[in-house]
Amino acid sequence: MNSLGVIETRGLTAAIQAADAACKAANVEIIGYRKVGSGLVSVCFQGEISAVKTAIDHGVDVVSQKELVIGSLVIARPELSVITKLLTVKSKKKAPAVAEKVQETAIENIVETVVETIIEAPVKNDVENAEATKAVADLQAPNIASETKTATDKTQSSKKEIKPESRKGKK
Image (cartoon, rainbow, N blue to C red; front, top):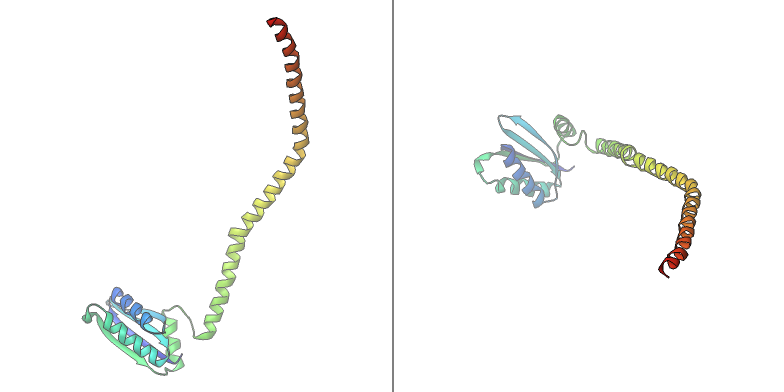
């Protein structure tokens, strides 16, 4: 991270409006926010120095009620301890790059576990149940086929017997 930018507003909606405008104005990333108290909200950004300056200026200008903007700040090359403290209080990330990789890996592991337990396990069970049902149906198929053939033969033989009698009755 080359620079750090902060916009402090009175109220969450003004902070959201400023953050949205700042992110759209330049290539910056929101690294966290802090509800200070008494309605004050600080939003922290990171990126290249020129992008952060542009984003902060645009974010402050866009807030609809100018009295809601309390202050803004751009630090060109912040000390690592400042970034660490800002990120550990309340943010999306715990530490700069190392924690981001650890968090992404942990999230991927959790997602894989959830997918296996929620999606793949029932699908495996459904496939196994379908295979078992098919096996039972395959075992019963010859019996059903022979019963159907026997019933069909009986029906056809009874029809043959009825036809000659019905002809005799009509003559």
